[in-house]
Image: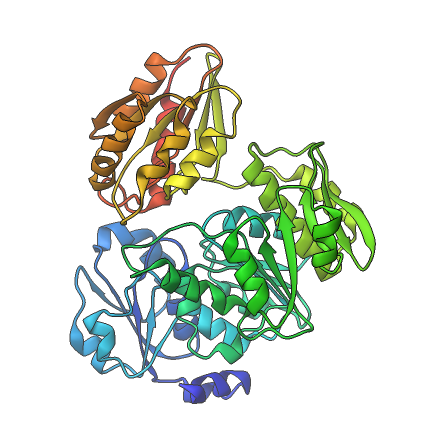
Length: 474
């Protein structure tokens, strides 16, 4: 659909008039809404199709009420894909869908944005820590560039702000493996800074192997050159592979102090955490502090996320003093180890975006004393044998019913980890955890699984947990 992108760039909007566009997946978190709005504003004939009902999608539909948009809800119809000039797919939609096979042209909100946007990009991918990292980058960069924007997998479609961008405004993008995979024309995507936080098994219900999953992550640096930077996690084998492949300048970050020997191997540049809790960066012979020992987020994994953010900001040209000061003020984001309340000296945290086992372990390890976890849900073909690391880290695990929970239980039994449930509701699991809690305990809702079954999505799960915790009387 090259003519479409050229017509928009040249303001020849008449070519979009009467263009038949089908948006597959309206959703509740921005992408489908922004795509429908974008094309409707440019005069296209827009059809929105979603398997969910009108009642569920009512909040999003209401926001589009001023436009002549046709809705097909509760089902997909082949003719809506066959007859469309362009189909905009939601990243969560499997590309092997039979409806997509009959489409003439398939794009996403990300690919359309990248085709139109020439602003400097800082792009972040990885298995976990993406949202915290991009949010921290945005928190700092807007201090220097007030009109900087944040979007992507963090539930804000970049199409929602494309009309508000000035020429040199930086754009920070969080990109999932699915979003990267959907960028067919890799030439439209060239981030100045690419960050890969870590690589852990994920989405293996959709990928046939780790190698296939990682191949999509590699797209983030595929079109970079020597004038760009690729930030790689030094403590992970995949990070070293990425560094050896990228044509950009590879730049490592590490949870541990980089020795002089390693620094020489890294051409004397890199970022690392020291035992005093501070984060340092070394580049072009200069060593500077980019992360204070006083931050507001719990857990070493979050400190590593802030280190990666700080390194990206430094390489983008932000002064180290500004980076260190602003990162020390960063309080985190909703749904990611989000502190909710202290009730009778028991702390509640919402970690609903912990959708893999390793994220649950990171949550438990964020505190020196054992915690009470609310975990479990729907399976996505992940390995729960890593739960051996939870031994002596938890007082009890309150399990939510689901296919993944059925896989968890044998490992919990094997490792002698106490668990209760499974519960058929989040409310019952929370009540049980609070009832058994003692003075000074920490209760974390950190599922380690997908949310489907009991909830619309992981954010719905987190919102419901907030409501439950808010309702508890002291």
